[in-house]
Amino acid sequence: MASISTELLQQLLAASLGARAHSHSPYSGYAVGAAVLDEQGRIHAGANIENAAYPQGWCAEATALSAMVMAGGRQARAVLVTGPGPEIITPCGGCRQKLREFAGGDLLIIAGDPGGIRQQWTLADLLPFSFGPDHLKF
Image (cartoon, rainbow, N blue to C red; front, side, top):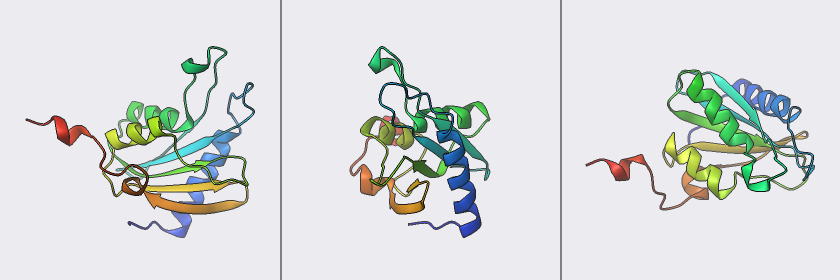
């Protein structure tokens, strides 16, 4: 598993928690923030945005990935997701697949909350035997 500096880890945590503060989660009350580190070393943040028609909402990871793509990023190097705690949060199945579009199995996924960093995995740990863009190359 790739490692990142303590300073960069703290920047990701601050960005994720900052995004979490902007969550639109009036139905679940479960605010989530995410921060994605791209291949250029830039951090892109996003929050979950719920919708009264439940399936129409989107997750913090999807929002952060969208921000990355709109800024010209094409590869995710790390993602830090924060929830309210005390339970450890991980990306949902759909977001794991969205992350796979922009990263390989070695993507570092970090869980945190207002108390700090809680745990980390690789994408391969959370999405073994994944299907990705490389499967569609002829």
